[in-house]
Length: 139
Image (cartoon, rainbow, N blue to C red; front, top):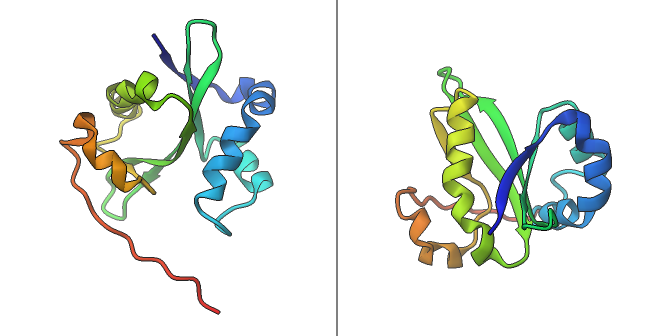
C-alpha cells in the first residue's frame, strides 16, 4: 500500500536531496523547458508543489510536481506538470487523492501535462478529456 503526501515547502531542502533523480526525470521529458536550479527555485517559492507516493517503509516510489495557476477568466487550475516513478500500479490510484488536494486548494479543474499514450488504458483516467499538443524544435 502507498500513501500520497504533499511535501510542505519547509521540508523541501532535505526531501529534494532524496528525490533529485525523480525531479531530473520529470525535467528530461520536457527538454529545454526548465533547468534543475529553476525547478528547485520554483518549488521553494511554492510556484510548483511536490507530492510523493510513499510505500509502507516511507520510501518514495514516485514524485509528482504540480503547478496551481489562474486562468484568464479567473478559474484556478491544478496542472500536473510531471510524474516520475517506479511500480506505477502501486501509486496510480492516488489520482483521486490529487483531485481532492486540488479541490482543497480551490481548483475547479485538473490537467495532466505530458501524459503518455499508454495511460489511455488506465481506467482511472477515463473521466479525463484527452487533448493533443504538437511540438517541434526549430533549428
